[in-house]
Image (tube, rainbow, N blue to C red):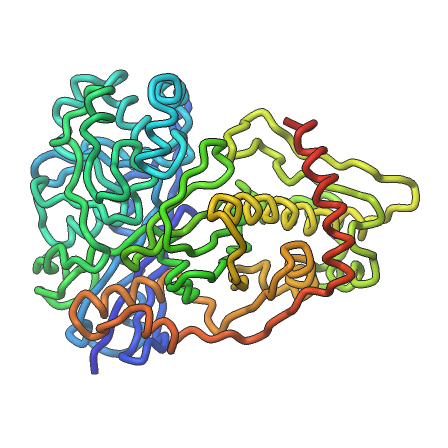
Length: 491
């Protein structure tokens, strides 16, 4: 029996899963993501800790299955997408993981925006932000001696895979799902953009080779393999970014499938067959694991945290299930109460000074109204993403939404989203989407899966489907326009 290991090296933790040939989940293991803060505002992770926690998670997952590592046919790693690690020629980390949460490169973001805002969007599909390009410039400008010693800049998934396989800098890689965060890539052509690199005097030799997520980057070396509990020589795939892995694990593998990741960040994406860019910065475009398939997407930073904050602050005496029941009979629009969900700034478009806002409340509004308005506010924001994406595509696209994450367990919230977005909203039969996506990549990398799209269609199925209520859709259309006006005021 062939087994495949999928790993997600996330911001809040590491998770590994062992899968059988039919992609049933046989065992899991977890590790810590230890976020550290320095005296100068740096937010980082120690690369040795990251590697050790990942190895421990994989070994625990294997041990939980009761089978030997020799049964594992391949591994694949997903990782945090927007941060960087600088390595030397021998794959030693010269920098910690410069996290996507670290904002020290604000000056470099401004520099790139001033010199090449339109060009970066046109070439990469995304706006300049706290991602690879500005971070590379920060190390170049603020730590020039160290920068000279850095052979390549890579991401956490690549770092762990390369260390496991004993790679050197000439074999450094980045898979194509990260390129919208690169700042320097020609995303359509799958190459580094000479014009952008020249504008900011970054040598292309500092950047890794661009590969398919299915590319086998190497084989586990003896001593390192023992740490992970796998056999020496086990193939390791390039893998992909954590968000792309989740989308694969939801079955969003063909045009016209939208995904709502109702987690810590509230993410909305729509699969298309077109690379489309948005100068306003409301949405961005990223590659799928599936070649020539794209995601037009955006997210609310900390959208899901708004619910935790509300409960901890105003509803400690109740449960989410009770709060969901309490809002069932409240009419669409929360009787005129509208909520702006950007409590700590808006990421897309980049408006860091925006704050949360309630408008329209009276003495007739209850705690339940305020809670429902949070759910609606996140869905109103999604409706703007949908409107922008469909507008850029130049017409209507038939689609439905697949909801995943903790928030998708709320039937009333799923109903609200269906009515506000005006489309069917579905849940699926899997919750292990991030590590499932990596297991599928590992299997495809070694030939066990010939067609990822077809495999995903068999593995991932719709469970519940909510169709929009025509009356609610009409009522919510009025509130969406009110939300737009309030959002403009808040900015």
